[in-house]
Length: 206
Image (cartoon, rainbow, N blue to C red; front, side, top):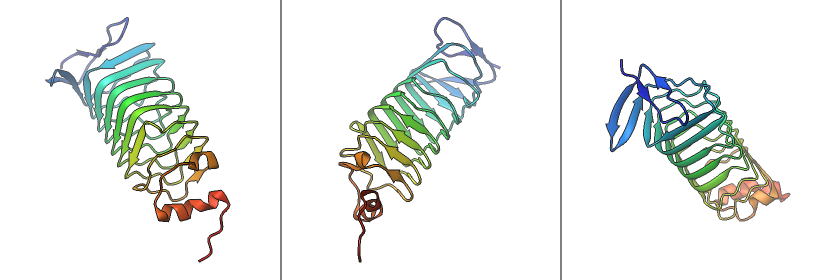
């Protein structure tokens, strides 16, 4: 059984029962279950595959130049945390708190982000692709540097967001709630426009 170390500031925290390999100069952690109460954690240049981080409470967390795939991060509190150049692939992110989180060059691909919270989240070149983002909450977010495609947004709520030029034409929007400010400049399909017209107080007569 190998012992491996994640780059954690101010401490040396050893994690057992996992597999370490070198992949393109990155550390690969496979089937890792991380449980720590350390105040500060930084994960840099890693690939986390089939890992479970869901039992942690991170006071300070920074992840950069890292790929996280097929992993369980459900119900984690990522509020006020920082992510640079991170790619989430097929991850369970149900119920995650991204409030006031800084996301720069971050990709979410085929992830489940249902029941997630995005309040004052900072999107900087952030992509959502083929994700499930149902029953989630977006408040005071700026989508100027965010892109979304082929995602399920059913029953999610959007309030006081800047969605100007955000294109959701490939997304499923049944049952969403959205205010007038968030609607301004939003790019939608004809079918979506009919469904969203109720939020403008418009009655469409056939």
